[in-house]
Length: 580
Image (tube, one colour):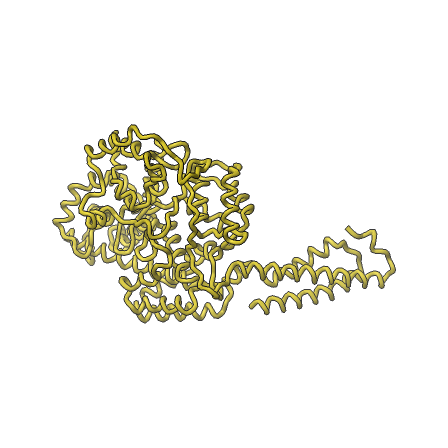
């Protein structure tokens, strides 16, 4: 395709020369006007960078082959559902896809696909998808295709694994992956809804369901989801006990119930005559699943605000004694044991005498995930995602010069950071150090840049631990492994507070003290692995674009000179006074 673009560019420039001769033979135009005309004629022949992702005929055949193979494995229903949502996922993924490191052919490696899919589902729904999220491990520790091993079968897994191993996935094939996953989630919604009707003794096919019956169905469905009850095995007795304790287990249940009913009112208003029908209820619950993560994220922001009341000097950290003190003073949160906090990567012990809780790590930790299914848990949506998105959109490359990143970040506000602002000199030096480590540019999808973003936005961007040093596990899993609850009771909380009450604050870390009071570790880890010898993508694409633009400019200058010579020969006028 690159050769075709160069040929088209050359042909267009030849056309310009011919046109210029004719024009200049009849009228005098300025060099500025002509140069602008040259740019208009030449540059559209190769368009924008995203067009390289949109117009690849071989990709069209390959993603259709993938859909055909998935249809044979999962059935035509999944194929239709997935195909109808591919374009939507493509649009959502494109800015991140363009900015990620590519392998040859504008494709993503296995770790790139996993990283992208995790971010998309977290951003859109707050879904922490099993098999896609790193959960503390490296992004290349397993293939994203293993998701289908349990939920779609070995043949579905093989369809993606084979392509990942041979050549990686294109943007559209990655969108097919996402759309297929979403279709399996829809299937689970149907299964859970069938179980809810069964438990309540209602007939799905019947027409006798009343308004209060459907409200009971929706409420029970949501309670089972929020509490993570297995719909395939749960019975009426378990559901009855859950109803007795729901307000204690989930104190904001009343707000959730009210919100769900509001969503239902919106959906059924379109077809009020079938408001009690099964298919209408399916549409209601699909809409709930689509919106729930974003809605419940308001609880995450409330949690963040509570922590910030006890924050230490704008560091995004809360002293552990104040964290536990808040629980003793009436907050039902903030009771997790140190062992659990450390496993989640929430505890900062760089100051041994005064450990602290890292606010964004705590908010986005597994302890605050609520609803769960066999595919995903609903967790807090990282505010850092909203900061990375504009950086990726403006940079459109996996790496950038430090000064360009500084320029963008100084204009980028967050919920607690105003913009424009001037970044501290120490922080800029850190960024330049990252660039030096990588030969002059900063990879924006690596641990060091994530750590830099944590320093720039300590309340929004989590501190990035090295892979393998933390583990995102739910409280139930922690108890199963360690044999103790992940939470303190009132007496052990008081003991923790007393133990640190007299401790001195010590922010020195291995002899290094950042001006912000935050520790810095120099270990790098790139999240998207590109096998040696398979690099391609954004950097090479940017180089090609620069060469094409340079070639177009050179041809335009040549055209100007030839046209000027033609004009001078035509009427003998001096061109000197017309130069600008």
